[in-house]
Image (tube, rainbow, N blue to C red; front, side):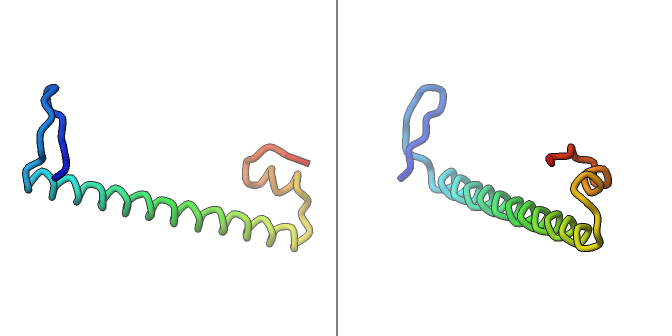
Length: 73
C-alpha cells in the first residue's frame, strides 16, 4: 500500500484513496501528453509557415514583422 501523510500522521492509503490517487496520476500524465502534442503541432506549423513565406521570397525581417517577433538576423 501507498503511504499518505495527513495532518502530520503517516498511514497507509485506503483502497479508495489509492484508486483516486492512481486516477489523478494517469489524468495528469494524459493532460501533459496532450499539451505537449498540441505544442509540438504548433511549433511544426510555425516552422512550416515561416518556410513557406521564405519560399515566396520574404526575408527574415519581413517575416518577423508579419508574425510579431523580433528580428534575429
